[in-house]
Image (cartoon, rainbow, N blue to C red; front, side, top):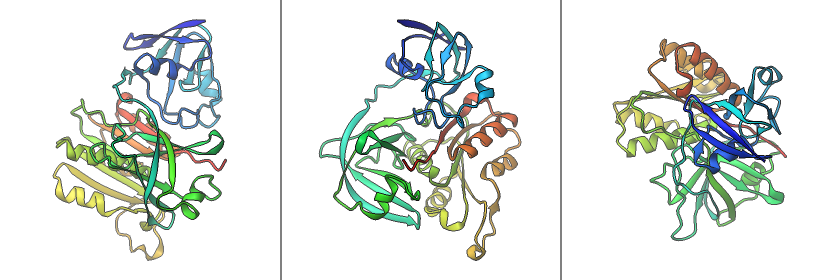
Amino acid sequence: MSYHITVQPSGREFAAESGETLLDAALRQGLTLPYGCKDGACGACKGKVVSGEVDHGKSQPHALKDDEKAAGLTLYCCATAQSDLVIECKQLGSARDIPVKTMPSRIEKLEKLAPDVIELHLRLPANERLQFWAGQYIDILLKDGKKRSYSLANAPHDDAVLQLHIRHVAGGLFTEQVFSSLKVRDILRFNGPHGSFYLREDSKKPMILLAGGTGFAPIKAIVEHAIAENCQRPIAIYWGTKARIDLYQNELPEKWAAEHANITYVPVLSEPAADDAWSGRTGFVHAAVLTDFPDLSRYQVYACGAPVMIDAARRDFVAQGLPEEEFFADAFTFSTT
């Protein structure tokens, strides 16, 4: 059985088969809804059902709360239609012709950037390239069908080697391997690219790029792509970590800001160590943005980090004038199973 889906405010329409998620149905027919994990965990695809009935599927309670369900919200990556629907999505667009591939890769380098962060370099087979948008991610394919998602830290033009920033998660199924047993020349399979967190190049608005921890990875890709494309839009980078040691590539955004008049960089520490001798900004990184930009109505924001940071930034930035459709986010979630 097929259901008719209408998207507001664009008026675009698509069909969803029985048991098919709204996200999968839209992607299959060339329409892109915002999404991140595709597993009901990050909340990036949350949207409103204006009319009709849905089954919320495998949505996780922290990503879709009961009061949000009662208010008509759902996660498009999990929801299946139970009737014809009218849904709301301001960030609807046409999918570009970038194929999702499953490919082998060989570990070329494992570089420790901080005690708990490794930059993993993956080289593709000869004459192969992965086409992607700056900010997207890939799924590392593990045994028993399990997978782990990591943002690409390199820009699309610099694609000879794929770069991933991997933080050690105690007991993590994959990160324990990265920090203990994986070695150069080992083979990893992955699938991608995925995600709707990528630079919107058709906009002329100034950008605020907000990173928390290893959320710096896709922000790095976006900035390096913007520089390569000679983008002259103002770019304000805010990177929030706990202590100075967690700013594991601090010299990079400092270099960007020094060499490009349209780029500024503000690092923010939430709990500086006693020996950090830190004289910079402290507190929550999104609060630093609120202080520096009392009116966000003219801006576009790209935010990547923990779900609690993403949720707070979305709420407070919109309250300070940011148009909801100009907030693009990728929430990092962690699993040990």
